[in-house]
Length: 351
Image (cartoon, rainbow, N blue to C red):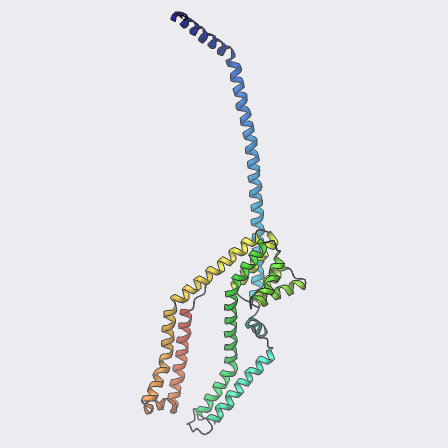
């Protein structure tokens, strides 16, 4: 066993520490210079990286600004086109027939109206030929019943065909709104699978459901005649004057001018249309009580008149046989029509 003197060990340790201190003192300036150089290099490298990041961020901001300006210009142009379309007069009868989906001409519509008026007049005159009523006015050589027949024939010839046209128009628009989101979903899946927009529209024109199918077929025919796809889609509002179709035309127009993810835009549009449909259903459900009340109030005078005529015909007879009763009926009809119009405005909501 070797023996070590503690004093010797202490001297050796102190000598090592002194040597290290002397070496550190001699090499301190060089070590500090190396550290400063390394720190300076890191700062320069970080500055270069920050410059690249700043430049990339500036490029992205410039691209976003350019795209935003392009979209704003597109929207401004579309708004100008819509303002020009608003200045156009109300749609003609030919356009209304197309919007209602009727394959008849204006002449056929007028002939149908005249036939309804003439048929109503002939049937009414035959039924009232043997009826003797007091004249409504002394200066008129026709009876009250004949005046009623003439008024009824006028309403059937002028009002009823247009009422039927409006009914068919609303039914077609409702059917279009029910099928349009499904067609947009098909377009989104087609575009995501790699098909171009033109082929997606042709797919709807061949495989879709009417009336969406017929409207997209018109778009395809307009493209074949040389019209751009954006103008052809914007033209759909001529036969389907709905806000949803305007949205579709705006999306296609912006994509054609500014670019972007068309499938995402159409998917968002489809989701918005479905949400609008849900909101409309909620509004209709909430307003159903008001509609039922309006229907009961509107039908109440006719129900009371029918019940009184059945139970006490002599009591209500002067209302129909006396000229003063005719004036009362006329005034009551006018006021009731005003009330029905006001109630209709109160219970109808636009979404």
